[in-house]
Image (cartoon, rainbow, N blue to C red; front, side, top):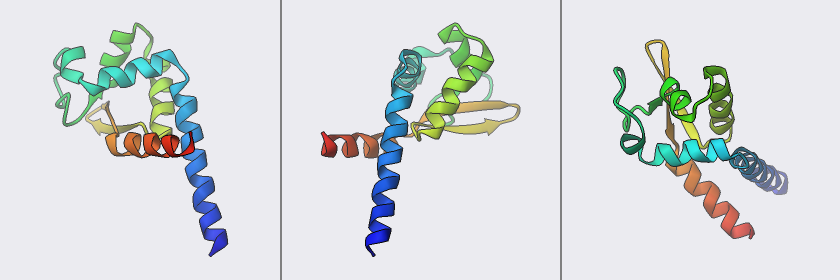
Length: 113
């Protein structure tokens, strides 16, 4: 039983560490801020609803002023940290915040600090 609890504790610590590393970049923080209120920060898109489906990676790259490969790397890091979720629609990938995971990470950090 102790081994199971230790394993869970290590997993939680790794998730928090990964999230903190993802948040240690101004561009990724900016993306998360924009995704809080996508209709306020992004123009309408042809496919997918900005709120329900998320924001197309191409629109995020455009607003951030970076290339598609650059924004893809930022979004990949955010997704691996559990801060955003990706959804494919046609040939596009849409991103939205994972509010439940963000809340869980915040709570874990507050408990530790």
